[in-house]
Length: 212
Image (cartoon, rainbow, N blue to C red; front, side, top):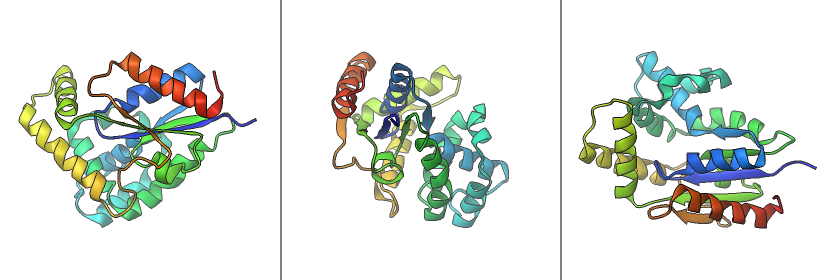
């Protein structure tokens, strides 16, 4: 019997990656942070001197992305994250990177994927779908603290503005806009601890899949 596919979507800094990794560890499933694919595309574009607002530059970079790119530690910078939000709105980029995600999800033993459109586009037939979000100010504070912990010089108001701009791009893009799947559990993590989020998600997954 094939293992379950668990789709975790949500807004930036909502805690979806943390939740996805915990669920993957708990169930012994492979995990893919699909946002890393778009960051890999963005980093290739920036390294080549391309413009994140130029669809042709973005599509060329997307065509060169390989699974090995996902291990690049340089993917986690704020500049790459901002560029990734822009290139991910390009239809040709999303089409070019879709196969990588679907191949991962099709593994016989099941998988956990997190991103922006897993439950709606990449894996619409996923066994369990969860949409993670939080208040914008809470998410901006989390990202601000994360960047400071990495030694980056940041201003909270700038992080908040970037977060609002990214939310707008993600939710208003014409292809695969950020939204919960109709059958997704929506989890607002604004006032929940990571353990509480995990327990709610685990109960939902087990109700959907019967997996303990």
